[in-house]
Image (cartoon, rainbow, N blue to C red; front, side):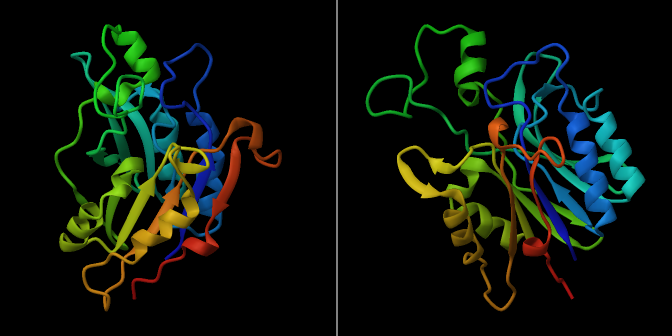
Length: 250
């Protein structure tokens, strides 16, 4: 079974919607390429679609591309609710283009704007817009479940960025039957500023965490790309990694 991981830029963590910018169109050529290459699943980074309604105009091109290529798609966004709340969500599109599942990030990745020690408390006296632009995960609706999605090739769990720092998550997903863990990220380069460990080095530590080593869990990662490093051969595409993410469930 072949999985495609796309490293691409779109909306960043604190970016609010702006006119004439819809990154969903950039994702379609990547989905088409993954389909031509025989992938069964294509994975995009965390919150790359920005603040959107689901379903809505931003998800429609992805649904159409998933259906046209008969491929599963996982992509991150800030899903907006009608009551003004929002969540960091990984959307799961089925081969028919329908949204068949959601995973809400369970571990907020807060920043260090306030006090000592850093990362412990929200900034004081800031407006809602300031929080959205600088530290949105203080105010997002965090998830409270770790679902495993039954796809036609196997059972898939999802972690989002900071989730991957906690060994309990892959352990719970393993206990719930996950055979593949998809780890989407929005951070570029290193995992944390205070830990100068390249993400690719830390990522593979998670692979060693299956509950039963005779039944290995495979991990697929898709991270955001810096705009200045985007490929000139396919706009917005830095890496479409399939060979290193091939998984055999037989």
